[in-house]
Image (cartoon, rainbow, N blue to C red):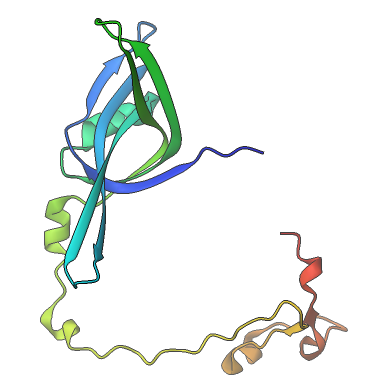
Length: 173
């Protein structure tokens, strides 16, 4: 089994370029920057940025051309393709691209600025953390519904919810 899948979230480095193939199929391309930020051992922030070339086909290419501009945040799901050619000087050249299969547009800068948190909501204390039970796959698991939700569960004839156990080997995934 083989898998060629890429997920990227980043900002456009340039506006989208829309073209058409000789048969009329729309194709768009744009640059995308993704950054990794970390703190080194000396406590200094470090940043490493990767630049990706994104290719989009069909109706999605037209939508990208219409709505995306430089700096806009996008989520790209696609596959990696490396192509090669010989340039005018006889040198073999390579280019690695992401062929987009799905794109989700991030918020516009204007929309992000209007989503400021009101001052009265900033002072609300965080809720207490809830302890999540751990499941050991070697043991038999029992499902414990919330105490107040037992009254809302419709009972079936002949089924006692207190005796129901889950066997992890019966789960099909």
